[in-house]
Amino acid sequence: MDYTRIATEEAFATTEQFTLYRQMLANRTIQDPGFLSLWGFYLGSPSARATRIIEKLQDVGERRVADMDATGVDMHILSLTSPGVQVFDAATAVSLARSSNDQLAAAIAKHPTRFTGLAAIAPQEPSEAAKELERGVRKLGLKGAILNGHTLGEYLDDPKFWDIFAAAEALDVPLYLHPTGPSAGLIQPLLQRGLDGAIYGFGVDTGMHLLSIITSGAFDRFPKLKFVVGHLGEALPFWLFRLDYMHQATVNSKRYACIKPLKRKISEYMRENVYITSSGMAWAPAIRFCQEVLGEDRVMYAMDYPYQFEASEVGEMDKEGSAVSRRKFYELNARAVFKLPG
Image (cartoon, rainbow, N blue to C red; front, side, top):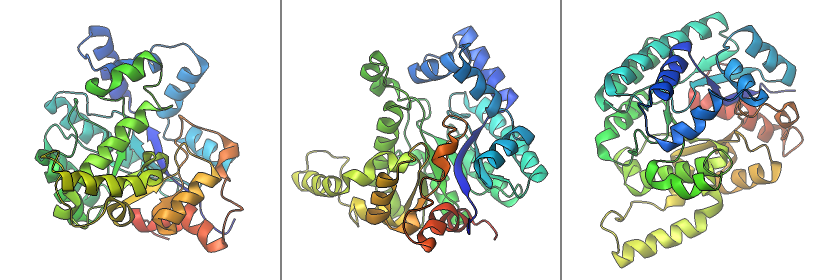
């Protein structure tokens, strides 16, 4: 191929992270239903899928590189698997984020042409999260931060978290908004039907989360802030017309105090402040639609390794569009957004 395949949403885990998760599950010190559903399964199931994923998450060395070689992927942008540090008390979260970032930087140093990564940060302490983001970028060479959905039921549209936004804008690095299990107030009807995870619930929660950040006015406050969202934008690109219309109608009606006028349309923020990836959505018609409505410069390749590791999906766009379009999708957009050399 005349392009490098850069996969932009690829998960890893540390031994320390899983040890703490197992302790929380064993001691019943966490009541979050999304966490219990997700990690109660993966850390407790003897199924082939669960054991394979747990093994692959903890490998940031030769086995992962071999999987990349076997499927034609040249680089992984690594991020701490969901929910990362965002289920702990503040002190534990801050400490684990720092340790995880140091381990990630060490793994990247061993395979500098194959791996780069995003910093884990602890929104439980927004000022400390901002400091860790700066350390990750300036001292460790990381390319932004991973934010795994809500933090103990709280969402980033709350201005108390916006020290993180200010730091990301000042550093000119993106924030990757990744799913976690829906919050307690949202999950119950999904959980009862087995739809709380990647099949649907992740997208419901994350799509709402991104939309709430937009409607909060965050991008008016931080006009150069960049977000990256996987799974083709968690369906928001397919709703742009209705989101614009109904947001304006709601503003005009003055129905909700929290829905206030914005400087631009929701679709404009999606085209100017948001980038999306194809993680878990290797489907050419949907990818082409997103490229059409958001622009070819806004859509990037991702696999979602190891949760969705299918060799046949890697080349889904190899014959789509022009050579320039393909190179943007697989390589150039990621280089621009994450400031990768080459």
